Structures are given as C-alpha cells and as structure tokens.
Image 1 (tube, rainbow, N blue to C red):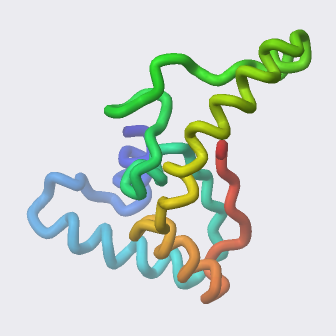
Image 2: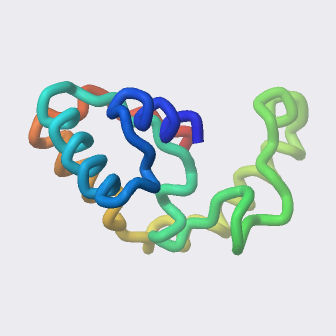
Length: 119
C-alpha cells in the first residue's frame, strides 16, 4: 500500500482513475528501462513452483530452527538435517516459474543490479 501511494503521488493521479492502470504500466516500463533495479524477494516467489512458504497454504507446521537452536544441540542438528533430507525431493523437482523467469530475463538485459532473497 505504501508503494502504491508513493507511486500515485509521483505520477500525480490515483490508480482508480479511468485509464490509470495503463498509465501506471507505461510509467513503470519507462522507469525500469532508465534505471537499474534491486530485487528484494521472499519465499512467496517460489510458491508457484510448488515450494511452500512458512505462512501460506501448504505451509509446514513447524518452522525451522533458529541458528542458536541449531548450534546449541546435536539432536537439533540431526533433526534439521533429517527434515531437510525428507523434503529435498520437493525442492529438487521444482521448476522456475514466471516470476523467476522475469527476474532472470531482466537480469540478463542489465535492468537488475542485484537480487536478494530470504531463501
């Protein structure tokens, strides 16, 4: 919502205005062709590839260990690696989705300067 209000303020019109979406898309294209962009990505980008995030539908019931929990106990380390082994097939069989492909394409064209992800 914050980004939308900033975008509306910068462009000088509300997104609900007639034709505003077409104008917003044109402005975004112009912005992206004139500047290099930093992409901040989260786990949600991979959900369309069949990899669940920790909040959405299909999420795992137990969240991963924190670093301190992992380092603090040999049994926690064993549990972590056992869960990783069991879940690996799901990750290994996943394919890039349209979001991944769009980022890769923009990166190849020099539009994106860096990609940071929580994964």
